Image (cartoon, rainbow, N blue to C red):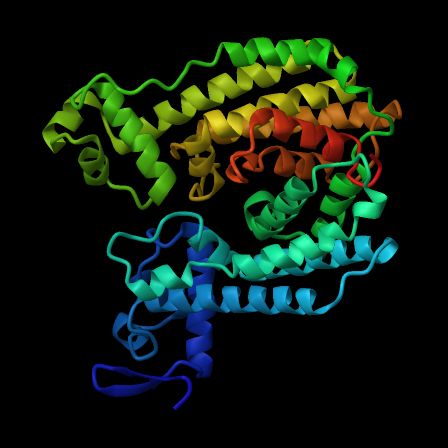
Length: 421
């Protein structure tokens, strides 16, 4: 019978009104606290059930998570299939096609924000094949849909942005919407503004590449990047740097909340006693990792702003910094994308990074306001959020894209506009 499972010898319906409430409640908890930070007892308490009663509806939290993930994948597949079935049209209709696909995917990502959060990190070591399979998205169908949509822009895009990276940017930004934008916003409006930024650009007039390369902001960025230390392999298995490196990798792979000190010790190849002689705690490790990361990023960000270049050149210098940061600090960017619920609390190990990143966002907003006031930048609602979202896209994950190609794309799309050339 559809919607019925066997639990401890009893037939249980997963389509009852109570089961739907349980599923929706679990989704809110997963979105806020992640998979590791949510227990069946948490779900039962939030629903108002005894833990034993909850098992009448679901055998485990893994089952609930798998169903949420599968529902998201199914919905995305339906959107992708519908887009592929609709023949591409040239001209203005092609731009509308891109905007429609962006809005549809962004809306689904916000609707299924719990599934987006669940996919942010690797599944638990003890996860079943069902959960691992549910975490996969219909990426092939989506990529075909984006290819068809963006390819239709070519007649209007000669000399414009790299189409492969434009597809990548739109797909990644819409799939990861809940990680980049406040939950209270209208996702379709967010998608529309994102398309405005990438298709039309944020400047009213952009200097040539040679002028951008020679700006004080660009020189400041290059000098700051040269001061970033290389990530050298730790000296040995018992070296403290080995433990820090292992923690960085585990936090990025599992998420901070899901990583235990035992996980870090195993990854570093040390005993627990050895680890505690080298480091104080898991929280101290995270603070050290994020403190170093935020310090290097903040110094480069501040140097570009302090260079005194006009707003457009300053944005270009920041773009140079961020395409290098997303590659150089890939693990750190994964750590802070999700999994830092309660970061506003002073006791959170994410708190200092939270304050620093909010400060950088405020500085970006002030830069944009000045540029809009003097006519150098266009006015787009919440433009700082959209620019930040695009700057942090992991372009290096697309066909091993190098920093030069990623920076060139940001100039062509973010600054000049993919359709303006």
